Length: 288
Ligand code: C2E
Ligand code: MG
Ligand code: MG
Ligand code: MG
Image 1 (tube, protein in one colour):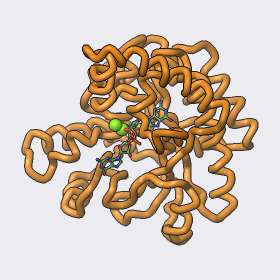
Image 2: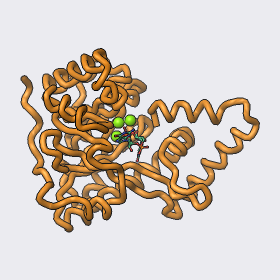
Image 3: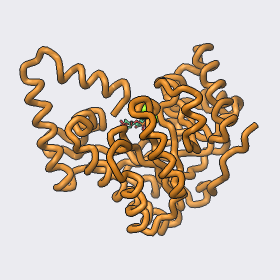
Image 4: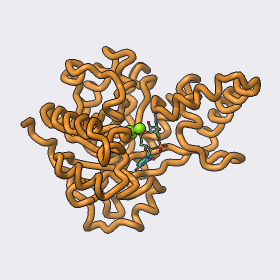
């Protein structure tokens, strides 16, 4: 986990508190069992077309149903997973569960694509693209129904490996999205070499569009950049109708956010959506 909240968690655990290192180890030990005992849960957040709010896909967001501590959000345990190597079995679990859930909602008349988040560590593990190919095969999933989301900061590490692995995923026919765009350090020439279909503008900037001229300028440039590269652009964290309207006017394609739906188990999303509101997949916008 590379987000800001994740970073503050790390500070918390590595602080002066003598219990902190122990707690860290406890989380790691428990997490190992959590994967084996099936305590992880996937919530899904709709991804919508901005213009009409129709759902075309969902993003898988992992939670941990901890026996004592309740439902834990990713910042509570992803840093521990990433530092202990548990991120590999965790991602493998998330991917297989997401593809298996997708087969079910597709059968229920919602042909939503699914987006899965992966960490920098996953891209560095040998054979990652091959493991994705095997999972697609196992569930009979058409590759274009899967999007792999990689944070911009994840690509800043071992950039050459990331570029190669993302290229392998694209060659499989899987879509690649750059997550949390704007807060990292992707240089533009690197972006050009990446096989990216979607750029997701970090919600830090989306939050500011109602009252911050600088955030608006950044969001406008990212939309233009994404379209220039032939990518779709998604606004993360859209919470108000005012933000939605501004983004539509600015030419943003897609969105996620509490305005449309909070993450929930897929069966709940099914109850709350009409099959008629499912958008058909559209091609990537042509470079302008
Ligand atoms: P992300 O991939 O950028 O996911 C978006 C996060 O923003 C989610 O938090 C989501 O619940 C939250 N969100 C969505 N709409 C809104 C909104 O309108 N307002 C606000 N304030 N928040 C909104 P969540 O579920 O806590 O996940 C946090 C991060 O954890 C994710 O950020 C992603 O980087 C990571 N993550 C989640 N699931 C996985 C996973 O299965 N594997 C890996 N490697 N990382 C994951
Ligand atoms: Mg994401
Ligand atoms: Mg994001
Ligand atoms: Mg984020």
